[in-house]
Length: 253
Image (cartoon, rainbow, N blue to C red; front, side, top):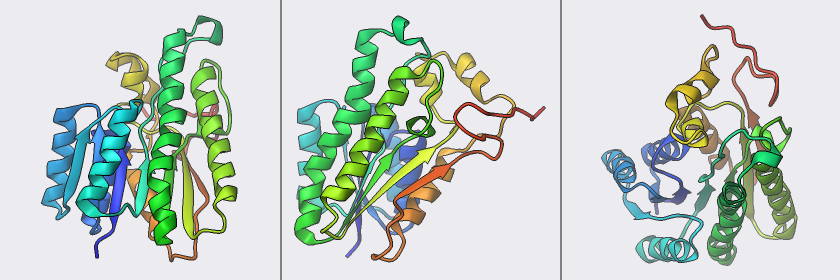
């Protein structure tokens, strides 16, 4: 029986790359994202690679969307083997005192609360079956804070704490948990962060060969393809010229 992977934020970037990678490796998929046209494109690509796909336009911050998404996947496939909590965002690089309260709420609802609730929906079935893998999209910002990232960094530090606690809480069950912390990945992440200002987003990556969504998709697949007794607890992956969250050497001409 084919394994089923559920991926949030699958319309572009890391989520879409992970969907295509897993489709090519024999997984069937349950995918959600907010943008219908982009999500449909990912679904078509995955189906061409041989995957069956359940998909739903959904905002992970919405309780009804989350519940319909998970229940639809279970109705279609009967199980979820892998949940990749990928959906997340940052908004701006403003200092804390200049950060809009609604933006801060959006970041925390997406990066922390929605992840908690998606996990609460998918995990009981994994426990009942005695198998499953939870993969969380963290960030180097969850290990080291940086100026202008107070809210985003706080959300990723919170995610790390939740994952560490959850790992202890379900240790008696054969459920694997992996936290993946990327450094600079060139996707639409910065375009969203800067509210559609692509020139400003592109300037972040100028002069450095950043990671790609496909690089992180390879990391996701490697972590979930280990033998059942092997758990890759966490992975920090960065471009070769990124030493940490703040030290980045731009050297390309």
